[in-house]
Length: 199
Image 1 (cartoon, one colour):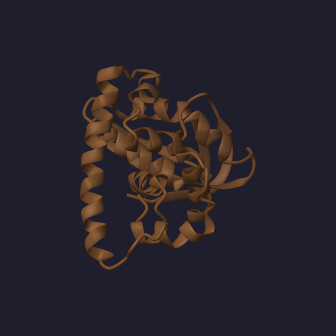
Image 2 (image 1 turned 90 degrees about the vertical axis):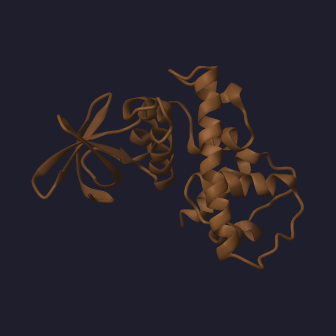
């Protein structure tokens, strides 16, 4: 319906903010992490949005960053995870940590999240890795002839994790020369790459 809303940040509660856009107050549900990043009440802010339409309800979900929106969309695509559960998960883990857990099969990280047990964690990893495989096939076809020169094993995991968050392989490979690859953890690499990709 719309990609984002930009307006005056009027107020917030535990679960949502109110954004005034040209005299209309939009109730936008957000995670705690997004609320911390979005800005100060009384200022003009931009919120990336996902609109969920049902027979008896239309709800807007908001995100401070594109990768948070992408993570939300991935989570609600997993069987058994609804929008409210996805927002709760986003309140308890950063996209970089989530993507790293998915690509490294780290069930322990995911099962610590509210409402996620061992079986749900395994299902998240399985279903999202299947999506990742299809992304990788498309990227391999569109980037034919591109060769990775760095042999660090974290590089491919980082690329996979960033693809989980919606970035193309070409864009990711463009920022790799700006990263200090040596002795960095996977999560640290992902965080640094995200800061470069968001510029």
